[in-house]
Length: 189
Image 1 (cartoon, one colour):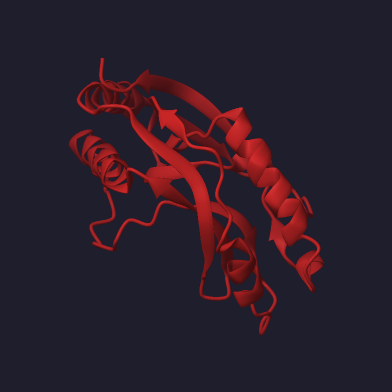
Image 2 (tube, rainbow, N blue to C red; image 1 turned 180 degrees about the horizontal axis):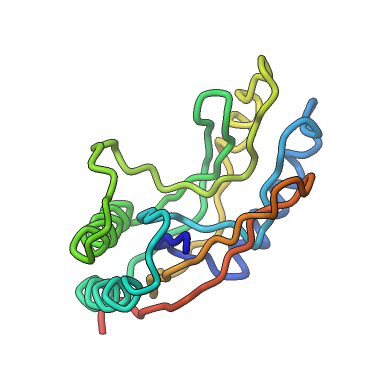
């Protein structure tokens, strides 16, 4: 099964972001992008890829332990940007060092559970993917610029979630992955 660890924003933060995305969809060429749905908006902490079912209990135990060792922290969806001209994303503001620490702990939990984690050390960029571009030459800078001043309401991140991604069936035009929360652990208990 395809798994990842994530922080899931509360409903209010999702509603605020949905209003901002509605404005983005009014920009020129927005209909040429593949927009993600609000049920897929999350901050990925660690991507595990395909995980054998027999590994899930140990991974879960390690994620629970990691969550208990981290304190809740403040976060809000704010700003945004683009990864080249491939992805438009919304960013995070608040206790980003705590978010990085939680991401590192989720990665370590996967490694200790025996998963082959990507060892490439890139700076962690907490983001929610809003749209993907498959149109050569389509400039995503206007979308990043439009997101620059967005600032949602802050909330307290109080849990770490283990998510399962169900990809759409091959050949389903416009279909999106479906996400399922397998487990969630409170932070700092």
